Image (cartoon, rainbow over all chains, first blue to last red; front, side, top):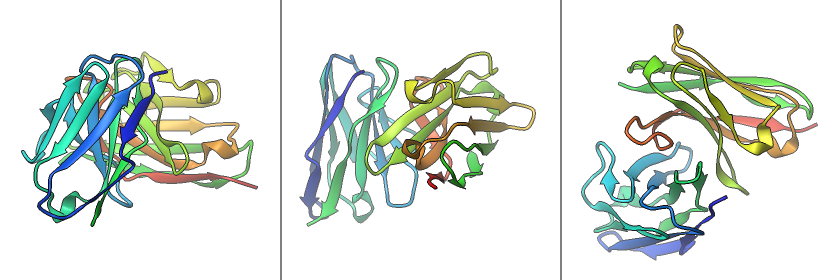
Length: 106
Length: 120
């Protein structure tokens, strides 16, 4: 099973700041990585698929990069609605999720 | 508008059974892979099962094989998860989700989630 490790566990930032979230895979997954946002009491929302493709309706401030084992989700300038938990997910070898990074207001 | 509306769930004793339903609207249900994902505070998000558009192929995470059955009724635009021999570790919020057609195994629409609690 491919293990996805997300860091940091918690990111404390202010609105307007840049957020950089990391996801590392236990073996190469090519570019088969997605990112989701989840707010309390809601299902996850697809942000990015195949490492760098924004899903329909996702603002341009969200971007993804990486390949192989190391991936990054960047939020260029945090809006108030961006404070949430973010998960990565791989589809290279079946399907697993990372443990999440919480982006909280500093 | 794409919608996935879940029903079922609740409290069940260990060894009991439960059936989850997911009613789809706003898209051609019979053209999409569909998936069940569950979430717990301890284990996070976990893929449970998925099913091919025509229902001919089904896949399960090892921990539910032989106990859970995923099915669909394309005429009723509905997805199901029959859960038997439930265990405490099956306690979770269960989501149905639609697979992104271009990638499969990424999920662009999700149900609202339903809580399943297995406890005596």
